[in-house]
Amino acid sequence: QLLAHLNQYKLRRSKVKIADRSHEVSVHAVYGTLNAEGTPPGYVAAIDPRHPSLGMRVLSMSNDGNDDESSTPESRREQFETMMSGYFPPANGTYSVIRKLAGVAEGTELTGKTALECNQEFLNAVSFAKGCYLGQELTARSQHTGSIRKRILPLIVVDVNTEVPRPWMMAHMIQEMGPDAIGPDSFLDLGEGVGTPPPLPKISAPGAGGIVAMLMGSVLPLPKEGESDDGQTVTATEESSENVANLQKEGERLMEEVASVAVPGAKIVDKKDGKTIGKVVSAPAPGTTVLLAQMRLDRMGLLGGEEMWSRTNRILIGDGTKELRYLPFMPLWWSDIGADGKEKVVEESSESDEEEVEQ
Image 1: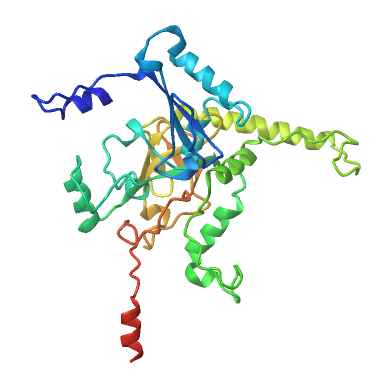
Image 2: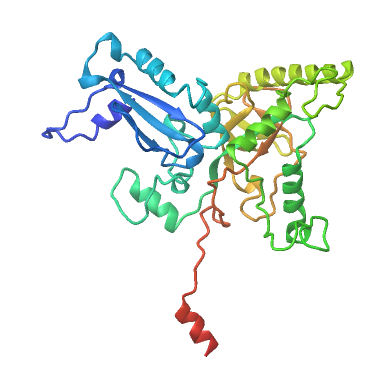
C-alpha cells in the first residue's frame, strides 16, 4: 500500500525510482535506553522522533544489497538479537504492546482521519510553520479556524464488576466536582504547590502496563512458606493462591471476549443514551485489553462542557452484547487542550511588558 501511494506522487519524467527493498532492511526496536550513538557498521539507530517513550529504532541493512543467505531478514534478526543479548533480553512482539500503551497510532490505523485527529501535532509529525505536504490545507484550516471533536486515545477495557483503580476514581471526582474538589479544605488535598490535575489520568506506558497487569491478574506468584528476602517467615494461604488463580482466569476470559468484538472499525456505544462515543482504531495489544480508539472528546470530559466521563460507565463494543467499562487515559506526550479540542497556547509576557505594567 505504501509503495502504491508513493508512486501516485512521482512525476512522470522524474528520474526518481521507488522500489520495495524490505528484503534488504530490517527494523528493530530497543526499549529502555536513550543512547542511539556509536552504532556498528550496517546499522542506523535513532530515538523514535515521535516520543522517547517509544524507545530506539534500529535499521539493519544487508551488505551492498546482496541477497545471499547471510542477509535475509531472519538472519539479520538473529544477528541483532545476538549482538544485543548481553544488554537487553529479546522480547518479540513487545513493540506493539508498548506502542498501544503509549497511545500512538501508526500505519493503516491513520487511514481516513485527519492529522490532528491522530494527535500528529503532539508527536512531531506536523508543522504549522512550513510546507508543503499532502493534506496541508485541511490540517492548517482545522488548526486555525476549526475545532477538533475526536481524537485517538488509549483505553483499558475492564469488566463492569472490576474495581475502578484510584487514578480513575480521582478523575471522576475532579470532573464531577470541578476545581472545588482540590485544595486544603476540600476532599482532595494534593499538597502545596501541586496544580490542578488533568481531567483524565496521565500515565506512562510502563505505568499503564503495571495497571493492566494488576487488573488481568498477571502478578508474581506468592512466595512459599518460609521464603523471604529479609529473613522473615512468609505464609501463603491456599485461599490467597486460589484468588490469584481465579483473577488470572477471569483476565484471560475478558481478553478473549474483548479481542472478539474490538476489531478495527467497531463502534463503541454508551449504554446510558445509546449514542456512539467512539470507534476502535486498533485491536487490543496481545495479552491485554488495551486498545486505541477515536473517541469523542466531549464524552471524555476534555472539552470543559456538561458532558463528563463516569467511572460507572457501561459500553457495548461492536457486535458484542456484554456490557463492559472503559478507562481512558492520556499518554505522557499529550498536551493540554482547550474547548475547541486543540492544544492550548500559553502566551508568555515579555520583560518589557512587565516593566510597562510596573510603570
